[in-house]
Image (cartoon, rainbow, N blue to C red; front, top):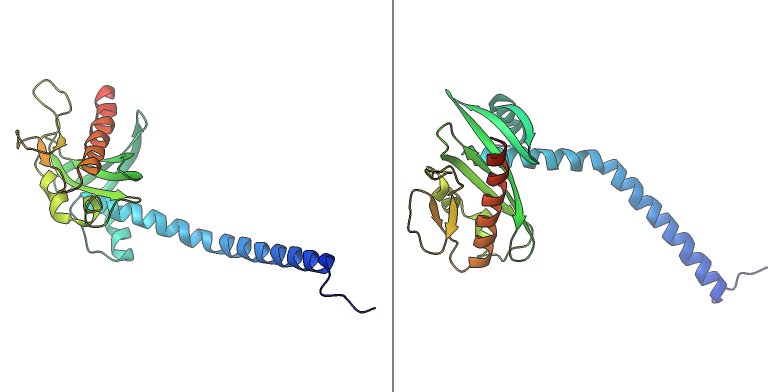
Length: 201
């Protein structure tokens, strides 16, 4: 009996079998690549932490080795991830940050020295506008503006902030030009995450 390849039943069965085969192949490829993907995600996180410690331009193996060298402890305080790092003769604590920008999630790492000053900073984003909000990630020069800023004021409140007009250069950083809303998101993220840590002290 000759199959009628133009019949509806044939088309439905053929399409269903093809979909199942493709779905199986995609699932297989996903499972096969997942360990590599997970490793890449973990490496990227380690690199970002190193960026916040002003350690950049390392390849994968160098970053892994440097991370093991400087990061001495990982812990969670009030929902905030912290990384205790040994930088020379001083202890630096890196705080993981998460918040919302203009178009989506933003994140980063803020390194704090023993005097409660910013040792370094690195920020990332999911979908901010290139050349504007994306500058929080792309501009190393802007990230370096945080270095040396005081985290708290004289009363122990979180004072580090991103503002449109700097009035206190000891605690404030200029917002990214043309990206006020994204900068506001960075400011809110920093305050929210640091406040959680402060509450546990």
